[in-house]
Picture 1: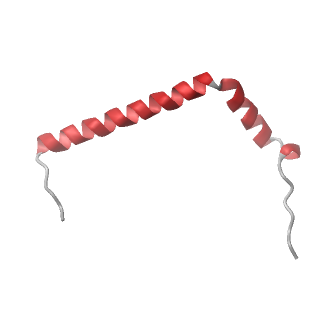
Picture 2 (picture 1 turned 180 degrees about the vertical axis):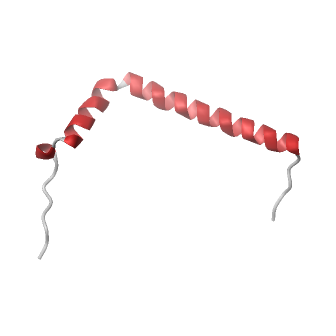
Length: 59
């Protein structure tokens, strides 16, 4: 069942979605600022082949 929205309802819905996305973006950016050293360390660890787990092939 589809419920039709008028233009005002659609616009309000888009504004709410935009506000929610902006709030999520702020939380993500705040988290990145709160933990920059940890994020940098994780990236360095993940990009260093000697620190990655060895892959074994089952025969």
